[in-house]
Length: 232
Image (cartoon, rainbow, N blue to C red; front, side):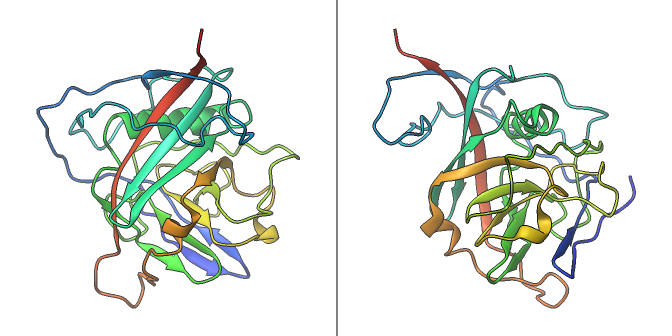
């Protein structure tokens, strides 16, 4: 697959998808997110306070022709993003961006994101990860089309967007989380979710320009997803 480069020109993000190294683990891979029963809370967001799912393994595969279908767009999904600085939690927008969220969940459940790095972190803009090469040129071997809705925009910190090249339909595994509102990205980059916990953790990720910093970015430890259902 063609390599992808991350470029910031006139407040436009450019990135892509490719292939990476393989790994192995003795833990079983869960193809679909585990179901977690939740009771209503007074926070207004069901993902706040969600517990970590049971440990699961990685498939060792780093490239596919397409993702398996692993979500139901009518369900509520929460992503637990672990870093060496702490934990972040995001609510995913499965209804608004079903193809991109399905791909993200598929990769997370395969252990694709385990032990990657935050390879591009720009002050007052965003932190980007999801590249197995750590350069901005890697991905999962397939592309996902642009999905936008008028109600989702880059209007607050903690918005999770899919990185891509100049081709709107070239998203892969790389994603970014915004530090601040960034309206120039509105309706041009698929939004898959919103951080509901851990903005302080995001702010601790070390700044890094992959074009000038030879050191690895801060580690992304893992991403796992849970499927919420109402407690009976």
